[in-house]
Length: 295
Ligand SMILES: [Zn+2]
Image 1 (tube, rainbow, N blue to C red):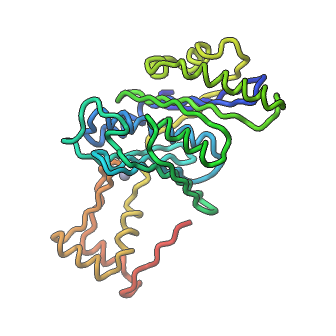
Image 2: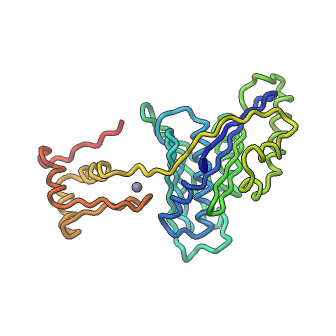
């Protein structure tokens, strides 16, 4: 398994963890565009973050991480479904991106929106400023500011591998004394902070856990696979076109020389609709645009 996440639990303290390793899905995302290295790294880190977050949430639907900023990297977006399928994209101005650009120089005054779009039930969105030193710090800030369980992130990517580690303090179970809980939590965090980028990127999960926590009782669970998959389809493109209404769709058809082409930005798939396709889209619908419904 090249792409998977794996949970672990400390037996004697109220802390859980999760690790993620992405290789093939990351390669799929990077293969669609010629991303400069600093952009490829941030995209990998955001993919790892999305996979970790999906592991902490119990829901059916889609998790979307969308970072927007005024700088050379204007958009960074990753989606991960509860079926553990990932896709991602970045928009940037290549000429303004230096070889060693970091998050702050690439995305000044940026914000990160975290959206949970469940198949059933209400959509939830949280927002945090991208003012940390890296994406891991920004996500850690988000959890600190949104009154969720104390959670810390470590994220690294190098254009080939994207790796992540998450630690989360659980409600009292093994330990009830607040001071004892705080000490245990700080202890596991302090050890995780000693991880170098090379270790996080290069070590397999059991080795990494042993390197950090060989003095603790830690249980590592089976890995759960993740994969690249784009959720675009001809049907979705058709429904986007239908939502324009017949008059505008026909105008677009005339403007584009007899065929409307919808490109998927995530996977470069192209969906073309000619006059007959468009006539069929609106057949029986009169001149009214069919309403778009989401379930
Ligand atoms: Zn696509």
